[in-house]
Length: 239
Image 1: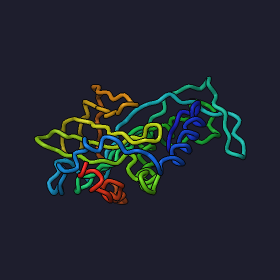
Image 2: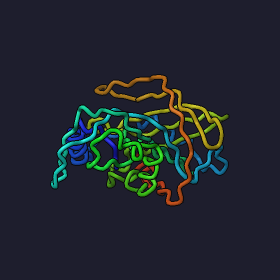
Image 3: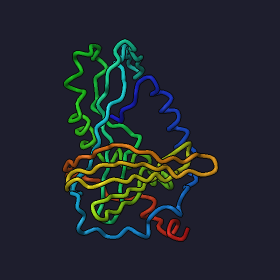
Image 4: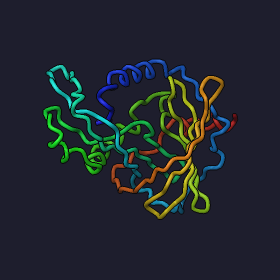
């Protein structure tokens, strides 16, 4: 289940549909800032990469009431609770990385559950991890085809226990580069302390301090690194 707060679920779906329809003519911004020339085959990465990394987070959500056969549900705003979610990152030896970014992953809570006291067995970080591990390709390749293959994909490099990650975020149908910087704690943990969005004349960029600690989890069915940048390096290196 790709987790969204129920109150804005319909709006999110509508926005995603619009983005998918128009993404064929989307603009990929900030190509000159992508450190593609700096990545290389990493045979001695100081992080385990036979799996994925996850960041634990909580968002406000609600149980539902009046579920019907058509799939429609109504949020019960009297049942507010903190939904446990994860964001994931997947690293590859060739220097590419997938970051689920604003896509939240969480354990599925059946619509039949109407009592907050009943959700504890579903609302866990382990359930969120199992949700991702059952079908990792559906997250990494959720919007495939053409420029959509760049969504949440990017590159990374590690020097002197410092890690820099760059990936593309979809904003209003176009793609903008996001840069995250942090430090390696050990071979299964790293901490991201700074995030920067490269904007353009229409979208304001920003830079801010953050505190996101990612932990490793092994995964046998890890998706491959096929993405738009990997398939079209000349469109970035020559800019």
